[in-house]
Amino acid sequence: MNKEFPCDKCGCCCKRLDLVDEMKDFDRGDGVCKYLTPNNECAIYDNRPDMCNTKKYYEKNYKNKMTWEEFVTNCRKGCKALQEMSK
Ligand code: SF4
Ligand code: SF4
Image 1: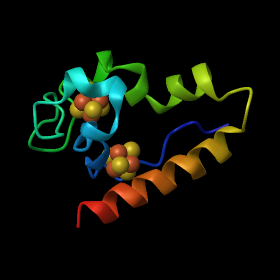
Image 2: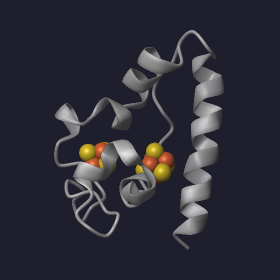
Image 3: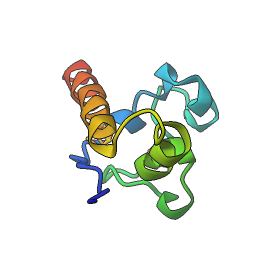
Image 4: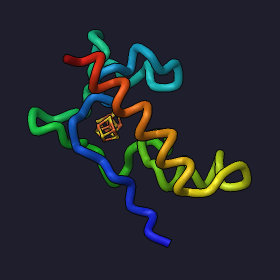
């Protein structure tokens, strides 16, 4: 099974931490993560929180509830919604 998440690297999910209670300590004050670089990369990628790691997040919370493909489909809907909001 290919478990690579199809990320557009738009950075939108790292710019609306104000929508995610669990990530409030990472919010630099305007919803943007303090670890997001100007290139939309994560400065702490190898040590990022599980919430930012789709594979880990799936394994921990959704593995017994849905397939990886279903999880990705749901997440991608969230990506599209965030991308629309940022336009
Ligand atoms: S919103 Fe989705 S596509 Fe954009 S960076 Fe985040 S995970 Fe990737
Ligand atoms: S820790 Fe990294 S992946 Fe997570 S929101 Fe911040 S910049 Fe994005």
